[in-house]
Image (cartoon, rainbow, N blue to C red; front, side):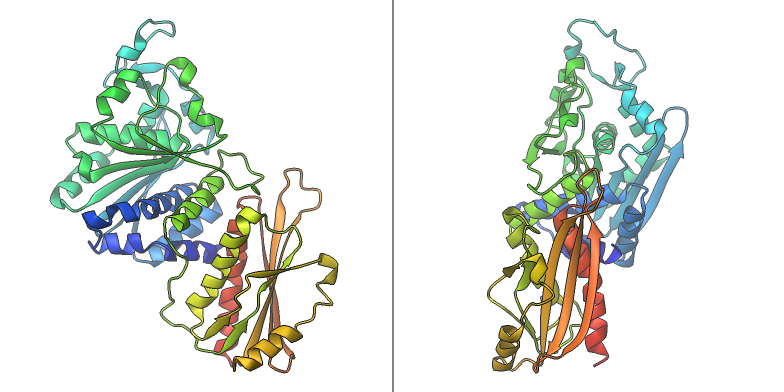
Length: 429
């Protein structure tokens, strides 16, 4: 799993270029999808599970400063991470994790933006008043407490090229928007303050939306079918900012609101916008390898996942091995019953003709985990290395469950694990 997150972070030239001050106005449009991917990674990393810990570790390994923000009082159990490097700061606020967070979500009383006067549930014309969701406002104030708001304002004032991205999933995304309002009210300019939320509920009234729609740069990433984004409409809450709608993968068995689903779609959006998985490792291994088409066990990948996933697998190999010849054909279908009897003579001959020393065979399979009630699958990727006489030299397998990942993400996780082993094999040769 750790290697999977390393692969994701290698995609983000934005995070390196922006940190070095190389993202200029003429590149802004081209980096928007990359910025969203950076925020999606940090939003997932703001949670407290093991996967998120590994993601934060990978950021730290790449020179990003990470400050954990954890404050608990009777108003909120606030958890967030401030990630910074060069001209980029990302404040990623965790979504619902604890019982206290659930309480914040259900503290739905409407209160004044800058006061504690509550509106009656049946008060008429409430949309004309600057009211906010009490729980979201309380959480934002706790996150920005202990001098953090002042520190952020000062840091941005001292570096006019710096930008603070406020992000989060679900509860975290709503809190990020309220936090941005607070900072804007303190004098932080719109040009240095951007909100990118994922599946966030609305935070307040029509009047609030009207008052801040031109003061803040807000992008709401919403998933088609995610009901959370509409959850507070009946109480008079409205959304504001630019809405960007994604569709979940056809193979996803997860609820549309899950952060893994948002991350999956954000990666796809990044690739569609011209992003690439091709990012060369600094220590490529130059061994002549012929990479055969992936032997794809029937029904393992839906057609909407196939090209994206297989290209990502090939890109990962090309990133790490500098003398690979990849077959033009992405994949060959194979029945599960025929895997053990598969004939590799065609690929061995191709390797000889191309003067390659080794043949790499990959077998990809995704099958439902027995007794899994939610439709979770186990994605397995097997790699076999042959010499040009067809003699097997190495066999290895890695797998990942779709319990917390989509099939696309699980396949990348398996590939990332195998790539390290493959590098070790050829290094020892």
